[in-house]
Amino acid sequence: MTGTRTRGTPALTVPELLRLRAGQEPDGVAMIVEGQGELTFAEWDRRSAALAAALADRGVAPGDRVALHFGSRDWIDFAVAFFGVLRTGAVAVPMSDRLAPAELRYMIGHCAASAVLLGRDLAAPTGPGSASMPGERAVEPWTATPAELEAGFAAETAWEGPQVRPGDLAQILYTSGTTGRPKGVGASHANLAYGCVTQPKHRRFAHSRHLLHAFPIGTNAGQTMLINALDARPTVLTPARFTPGRFARLIETYRPGTVFLVPSMAIELLDAGLHERHDMSSVVLLGSAAAALPPALSERLATAFPNATVTNYYTSTEAAPAQTIMIYDRTRPAALGRPAFGGSLRITDEEGNPLPPGETGEVWMRSPTATRSYYGDAEASARSFRDGWVRMGDVGYVDADGYLYLVDRESDVVKTGAFKVSTLQVEAALHEHPGVAEAAVFGLPHPVLGSVLGAAIVPRSPGLPEGPGLSESEVRAFLMDRLAWHELPERVLVVDSLPRNQSGKVIKKELPALLGDSVISTTEGK
Image (cartoon, rainbow, N blue to C red; front, side):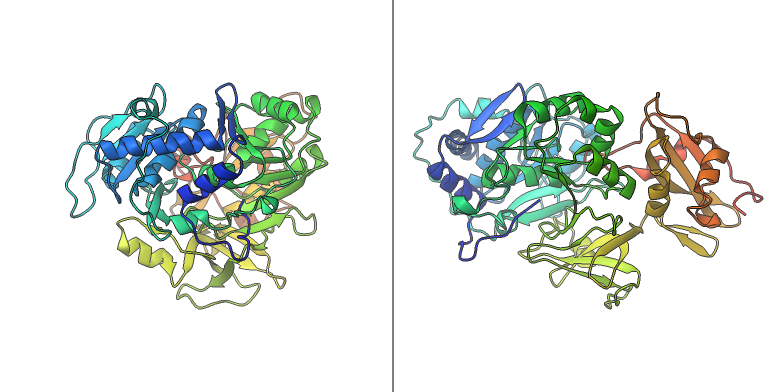
């Protein structure tokens, strides 16, 4: 989802890039939020400058952390707030309105935010939070909306602000926390600005007048779209709230050449049959991020968007802008591509020794620019960041041509008896079932084998051609010629939806509880 930096482009801070773009294309539209308005580059620059002056007047100083709590309809105010914070030399901490109050309190306390900027109709979470960073004095942050702060400062403000350098910390983004408490990932201006260009003729996604996405604020994918709004050629378009119908209508109305989504959104679009009722022919690049596309879903997308190149982007909040990119290839349906834009990839054993092609181990990626780190957690940083390499937390391998294949998340691999089972492989097989829209596989405790597999599946829409049923025995029978016996789920649960975090990733740790007090006996799983 990023592009290469043009050779010779100087290192700039993120606000400097906005000032440059505003000078080049003052009336160009950077962003449109459906039904909420649009933002030109000149207005973006002017409003963020006024907001920065207001923040400094309220005492925000370089290095301070400022939390930004906004919902999707407030993308414009969020963009202004993000750049206003950075112009003061402070650190922006984006937070989605989809987070629970306890999560917000934890993040605000963890980074010791001095202020919280709010979207419309949102209130700062109250109540006990976590302790502030070691050595920091806990201070209750003050709150305000961007409009309240901007109101007292004229557009012609002469406030220049402090000198901000490319190596300064610009952003703390909290991980999705699918397996534990979220970690704050710090990124410098140099990291966020990597790949940005200053020459208009070299701007990314030049095939598009509009780039459509529905990624939430507070996610790595969402932040990538914010930088795209700053740097790419097309206007970035987003719905105030994602629904499949609204998303399809935006494609038909604005005819974007580039569309980004996550697998769960793609499934909703396809299962509703919206590609059959709306004109999707404008889309020439259909990108998926946040989670790997199951091969069966990639094939469905390729069929539904015949003019589009279906592309999967693999990265993480910690590794960005390092990434692999894979254009869907029916000869390599499960591949996640090769490193792009100057990054590197390696597979290692548990001691960190590189492994040859074909051998399974830990996936590491190397950033092509200044690496990120965990904010205030040197111990966790030491485990995940080494000499420019970032541990992805995934198990995988590369083939002889350098293509990456994931086996599973390290935390999701299920050890059953003497076997280690990839939940991704089982999920890919379940997605081939004509009645399955979504699937998530997880481990369940077993008194003899240690663990066996459970599967939660979301059925496809009614009215589809009859095929294999979704009972436990029918699902196992469907999988028997696709999987080994130890990979067959012992429990199958049909659900209306899967629990997800704000990034769209399934929270697998919540799935076993859906089975209630069901106990796997010693005679099962054999």
